[in-house]
Length: 580
Image 1: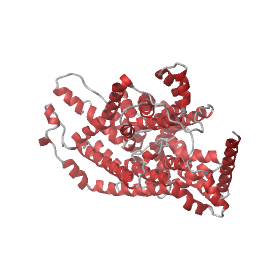
Image 2: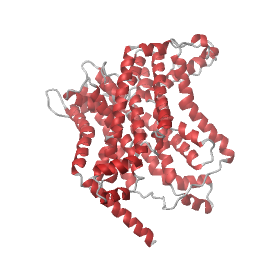
Image 3: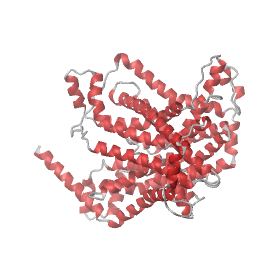
């Protein structure tokens, strides 16, 4: 025991020395703080200022009072809370169940299940919403057309609070899965073994031991997905707008579409949504921080695999339902929509009748000038975001992991701050910046908003690799006379390249699928793919929107496949997406 204690003491001293070395480069530290202030703090400050600005230049709470008196906003706020709460419950149950099956049971094809569990993470929320709208629209949805052909009066309506919650819940299952599976991998199985030895059955052990141990991860995931759902624009807009259902994000968007735009009212609505998300984020941090859930020992361990036995068929069926609901059926709906100019089902055979199919929608979108411009802009933004992931995010992650003392906590908070700000609110805050700086209408304001939005994911992905590097390596180089730059170049970068490549690929993918900030910042010259897809949907061009959605999804799949083959890296390399 004394040897172990001595070893731990040496490691702590080395880590302290390395942290002191980071702190001894004030220019780097101050520069990173200034970057964080400009990227994360300034936009929020501008949003708050905009929400307080009244006619005549005075500051006051007039716009908040108007929102409090607005029945439309109160209804939108209630719909947002209800749908986000229901959707979060669905995500928690399904995501935790998938994580349990993969990490604790003898379910077959675990590799396949682990991959399909995170597929929605790499698909645009717009694509997911468009697919379910094509499936269950009350008038022209594929399911309802098929039900009409079968002669039944049953209809499926996705344009309800429950429908929005259902689609939100399905889309955000990967976030819960990643958090809970990482926690289950870290739990010491000896605690579960002790319960089993004492006579507790499998499910009692899970209920009384396993779930309490991973409850911080479940709580974190719940807070995260609730905030993400509350700030989601694509799903409530596509599913709720046709049914005259209002949500906070769609209300915010509508305020900016009025003539003249009500920018201050939109800023006030966005501020309220941001405050709710921040309060949830801080409450979760305080709750988890006050409780001790450490259960990982210094010894190597492998969790005991639970034999499903007679429950195997039920568990496999639950995975099959998930795959059908999240991947197969939505993609099939988009495929059917994209190959038809107008969708009509006279009889069931029309669904697969090749005479009714064509590639005219694909030809149209590939020849449309706005799509070509959007492809170029999306590519430029994806490359720029990925370059930031290889540079800025690495420096932020390194400083966050190696910094010690009073400055580390606020630094980490600033890095994670954009994750607590809904994407559309972040886009609105950058819109206020663009109005005061010569950036409106340029691609640079989009790039800055992307860098801010992806910062928690990019820095978090790299941090996961840096935590595996013992500070002794850098301390040895420092003692030998190597400076900070040389240590980073010769030691840290080569050993952390997996995490850096993962961050690059992750940011590239997120830039291709981003809609929430883009929809408020684009112009006809800076339009991106997701915005063109949204415009197609708004104008009733479902076939073109579906075709472009499939093209976007294919680009993401090809990118991930190339990254896996060429680099052996990708966003899947990390245990969690680090969004909160």
